Image (cartoon, rainbow, N blue to C red):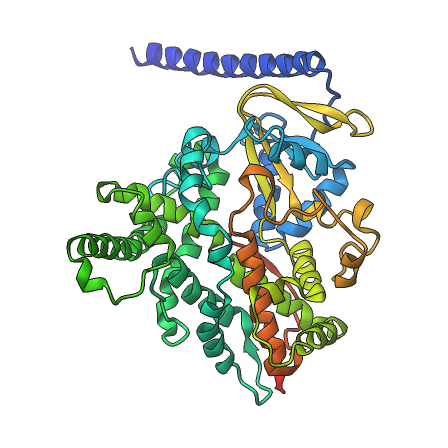
Length: 507
């Protein structure tokens, strides 16, 4: 009896293997036929030793992540393919990798509804139970709903209020040693950002510049992002992954957010019931307060998902961008001197939104920092149905390429921003002056573009300019104290593994 069962099991196993390979053969034939049907050129294929599952590609990428050399791995991988667009197998799935500007443009504008997010951010459970649908995860009608909730808040009045940054920046600058001691600017900007962002989002600052132990919520968010990245990488094999710390961090952040949400709904109820009691109190201007007036209290999880969809993409991004800019300025004294000169020419004038936006060299420094170390390395989308992209096919890579339904497309900003075909032979160098003669459109997209452009992109630029301007006003000199250089560790985007170790000279 047992031998008969063994034979049946073996036959079933072989049957499944044969069925799998027949399915893969059909997929290959179908892909080739449709490539011709859509009048596309053949797409370069990664040189796999495992063309079925792509285990070699997965291991190569994983080793690069663990060694904190993912950015250089991308440059090496693209160079080895000899093209800007290629396809590869990743745990059996077909992935398209591209650094072509035209593909980024098409996916962001004319074809933005053909390349979607939900399959890789919601449907696969990667972020569950941390968050659900929101402006940075949803498609279709729900995306329009989420965008409609937050967009009015990110109009000019939200980011133009530069004065709100002053007390936090004063506190951060006062913590910087002026006796020549080495300190880590990345730590200070992280705490500064947590304080400013919690006030901006929730109406009450975390105040971790005063109480450093309160940055525990930011560290929990970092752990959530790490876990989500691992889960996304494991894809269909996510059920094999066990990460108790990830769930513990989720509970911690949920409790943190729930407290703010409950307080906001309670205050809203009290204001409606006892309006005269709040007559002398200023109206709240934070995003949460704006949302609780649009989303009923019985939908608290929905509201939390909407807040999370804003907070997660911004988590550490502004602080890392500021510390990255200071990292570059500490290593390029000529750029530091030019930026100082521009800032000091303002004299005692108040730093307003208009003045900050009008500072030419300041904007060059901010753009060049985004270009050399972008917060968002790549834009990832899934083909909602059989479609095409304009570049990457054929021997010269200039023909359209076919994307089958379910194909995952990675548009690489990091490589686009360092493409010598557009930026010149010194593309890898930090040189703000290059912006004096450039007007890039889709070659430079740190916040994406089209309908899904990050709604906070002007806010990030304004906050960065304000901190850099205040830094220039207070300190005369800045010196790099980290001999190891920039080792990118990946979280939401790259940040320096070694921190940003510098010393300053007071003015």
